[in-house]
Length: 310
Ligand code: GDP
Image 1: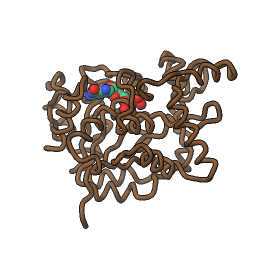
Image 2 (image 1 turned 30 degrees about the vertical axis):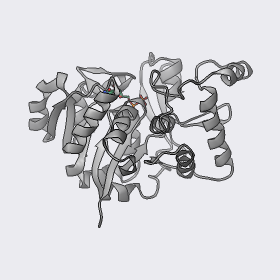
Image 3 (image 1 turned 120 degrees about the vertical axis):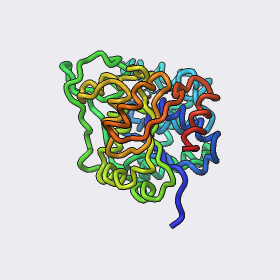
């Protein structure tokens, strides 16, 4: 059987930085990317898929790199009126971004699946990599807090991750299944790369789907992950808070513990090299130290080339 090239498991902003580097380091056609849909939300009657959109705009070279999401040079005229109509002020979507949500919602209404719509959007924007939402069925990450249950986006943006986390609920987990072909891609991939993404709510959602974890376990020799935690801190977002809730140490070691059954190779940041011996000894994962803080394009490409060389 011919091996497929690289399979990537991805969340949003952290993943997009690495994927941009990978798209320079190899032919973008070599990349198949499975993307978290737990952050997907319906607002203003529109279907919004934050992680899918961040990766899409990044690969189309249209993303606002400063913010890490949305289109570059976007305006917010439509949103200013929507906010008045809906008396609503916590979610941001630019005019061009809203065009994606309108198009996606229109195709949903015509009966297309999320994976089919994603293909169409990628084709229209000239993307050569294959983007695959993790599932076609509804799936929502909800955060239970003392103030009530919130959608993950509401917890992240409106609440600014301030509320105490009582529980994390993957609504739809029992009816969702991996999009057709994902399990086969896992078996056939030459290398599998788990991006530096939130382990619990970006990668954890993908791993919660039927047979994904078991299939990765079977091929763990070719699976590598990059730690999203550097010196005990997240670069961005609430991964630290969610890891604490899960009972994990907030460090690259804690992330490795979470992935230990599905990875054989692990890249930690050079600032965390002291963890290499303990991860290798206790968890039996081959660990590499590299600069993983992707502050510019050069660093993204450097990390991508390093991964592809392993
Ligand atoms: P989100 O859905 O937008 O939060 O995006 P992800 O799940 O992809 O990413 C969030 C995680 O990416 C956080 O835990 C960050 O610490 C991590 N991250 C972001 N940028 C970088 C980076 O340059 N290097 C590393 N190692 N991790 C990063």
